[in-house]
Amino acid sequence: MLPHPPVEVRFLPEDVTVPATPGESLLTVAERAGVVIPTGCRMGSCWACVVDVEDGDPIRSCITAVPAGRPLWTLHLYGDPTWEA
Image 1 (cartoon, rainbow, N blue to C red):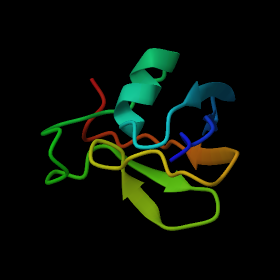
Image 2: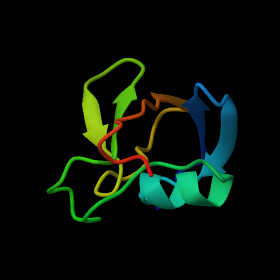
Image 3: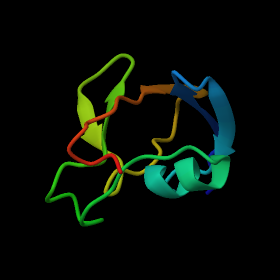
């Protein structure tokens, strides 16, 4: 079985794009890129890490893996004053 090609993950509004491996945690990709996504529990329960997928529904970045089969995945980050320090 051939490995999946890398996926470019683009974080808005920072406009930071970084290569990622399909199956890699989105939160790990963001941290590697220097993009801060607030987290509370790192298990998906608190919903602090929610981001919007450009062409889909909101997702929890701590429990979501980078999908295979798409060359670019664009995510919109938004701030929640409850989780910002």
